[in-house]
Image 1 (cartoon, rainbow, N blue to C red):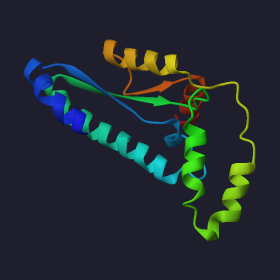
Image 2 (image 1 turned 30 degrees about the vertical axis):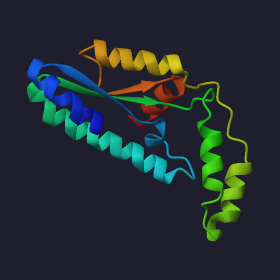
Image 3 (image 1 turned 90 degrees about the vertical axis):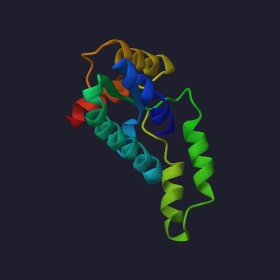
Image 4 (image 1 turned 45 degrees about the vertical axis):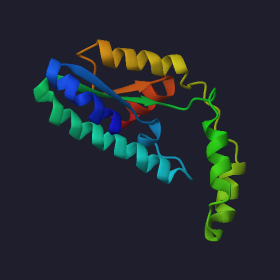
Length: 146
């Protein structure tokens, strides 16, 4: 939001610009133990939707890039490590099951280049959709959600 506030005066003055926010495919298919993360990404999406309405009269576009699961990053390990100590006792047995079960292996994943391509599309293609899934898995989830 602070970055948006910083760039809007210049974009309004030039009567053009593109704001690209990044969300997550967890907004398309929620996962257990990620409620706060999912809520934060849903907030990014709601902010972006309203912002798009507010800045369109100034010739400014807003786009949302929605990446899927990216195993080449350390997100899963970091999220698991951070949440281990903050789980209420009532949920501890269930959380252990969630963390110990192997996630279904999918051939479809998201790479850094998938996200870069989606951002590039958002910036350079004025006819791009508001929501741009990034990565084969995100594309599949977006199609199922439509």
